[in-house]
Length: 337
Image 1 (cartoon, rainbow, N blue to C red):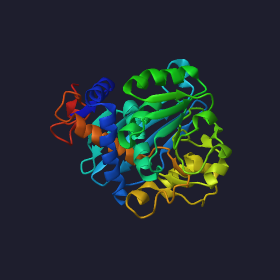
Image 2 (cartoon, helix red, strand yellow):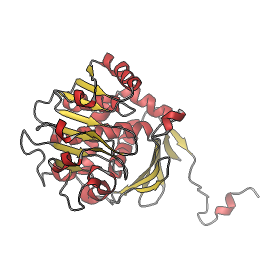
Image 3 (cartoon, helix red, strand yellow):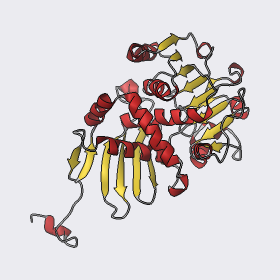
Image 4 (cartoon, rainbow, N blue to C red):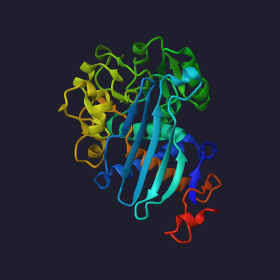
């Protein structure tokens, strides 16, 4: 039998534990796994692109446990009453090849994306940051806000979205939780007084959400919306004058903001900063960018955290997934024919 956590059980687990404690705990798992970076198999995700969106597989292994995530990204889905992103993930035992854990990962991905953003921000944000601008207030926005508060204590938000209903949704969901929220009149207005800027827009286009001229020195940009070929959010000139951190360079050059730059443009991987191999922010006036596209090790960490978190609780079921005949060589014998 395989441990299975369905959507309702993940939602119930999150409600019982709390979004902020989960993100905080997930950061610890991410830091532990990024700290043993060399142990993992690493490859860019396998993507199948269409006019409607993308379907991807994201595999990795640390030699003991194998994991993968199936995930889609379809920006047109909300117009049809569907989620932009859906996902599920699997952990398996490397020695036997048997799957051991399966979970929904639509909610879990939102948590791990916020946790990864917060982990990167711990390494890159300016000291004494108090305010975050959020450009794009879709499905990720509440999780990002709660992640930055949990890990960095950020409670002041300046928000902007081209969709007024999306902004109203964010205000309704998290203002009662104690956030100080300013609804800006434009993306440029949202930047006023913000030391951290999160961009998370959905359109699958090469867009310029942040113009170079609007960005002052000393800010940290958490760019999480550009995550596939042909989809970007930042002005190329802004990239050229910033320190850029990425998850896995080979994948980010295909999908991230740096797809706009020369192939040899220098970037720093998060694990290098985390382990002290390379510096993070070098001075107060430096502009830092986390060019986030999501990487398989993050999903591996999130699945491990959920697996450990539901152990001994009622938030999982057992799934009869593995054919297991008494005689391993007589699979046919399981049939009643």
